[in-house]
Length: 197
Image (cartoon, rainbow, N blue to C red):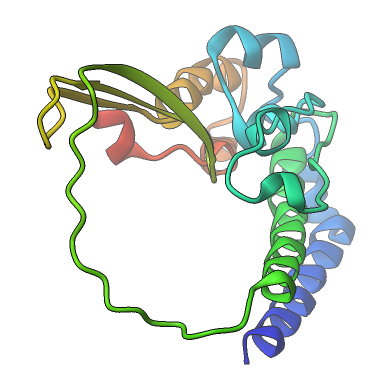
């Protein structure tokens, strides 16, 4: 069932990609619109698809592999123009790459029961601090935890990618058309509730 769903999803994504890559109106409204350069993106701390759409091949799953990513074969999807078209194209191609990753995981999944009785496990880490980061769908997400040795964190902070992405939006709007604001903002894929947090 999962493979059938993935196959159908793959067809739909390819269909959308073909349509968006050939539609003259879409191309006029997205090519060269809301251009973010690699330099600007790096200076503002932008990560994820908006950064990769500027040609920067940066993905934590490849740079600092965690979980099973070291055992998987996948490409870091990039484009070079840094415009609305490039950001949407990166997203579409990343969907196809994600399907490929899921197919590999399903193929490598060991057989056995899919449910287990799990009793709650309470951990009491040593006193200290740690910072870890992962590749979130919108970019790099970091987690900072301070432990006082108890079973609850003394401090816990999450640094999501959306704030840096939102900071990059105003320069992209300068000198543009009001009609392009929605496309530019949507292609940056920021998250207002995360920024507000």
